[in-house]
Figure (tube, rainbow, N blue to C red):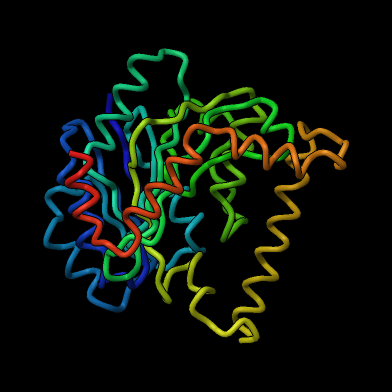
Length: 284
């Protein structure tokens, strides 16, 4: 079972080597790395060149954004299972082996989510998050605990829903997960932390945490995100319950009752402020 990992990147020379090494050091052999660069002008190209013999496909040139890069990357992938890793994030040890075991042991599984660790620019833990398992009621309440980018999905499912939406630039992942759910597919929750999501000022999704909210560029970004949320809400309404009076308390109750919720709080309390390698050593 081959796993294809697409890495879209643009001017992430500070972090891309660590991201690539986190894939190469996985204990799972049958993997494929595809790097789609949007025309970096920093040291990204030189760093990728050092590992060219371990990268199946590497292309660099102007594109129409991350979604376009992902779509192009997936079109070149030869794997049975797809995922993507942003070039400033980290794939945690054992992630791919856990994914393969899950898909092989559960023949009906079409997609799976891991659990997520947030880290800062220097690799210190900010928060841990163990997501909930599949729940039809949760989906009807507009909840889909996707834990950001930690998704692995089979080629057939990706192609069945028409692939990634190139028109979206910020919430393309969330929209894709909802289309998976609406076509009748249920995800499986992996038991381990599989992903480290890095928050820093130059990150596409978390950069707003470090910027002036009144900055004109940030205002444009928030407006674009708002439009994409409206689009996703329209998709959600196809399966979402209509009675909004009880939605908020039910969502809160479901989240609090999930086994991973308390574990997330404990893990966050224990690991916050500590270097990621300590957590990985504990994971074994």
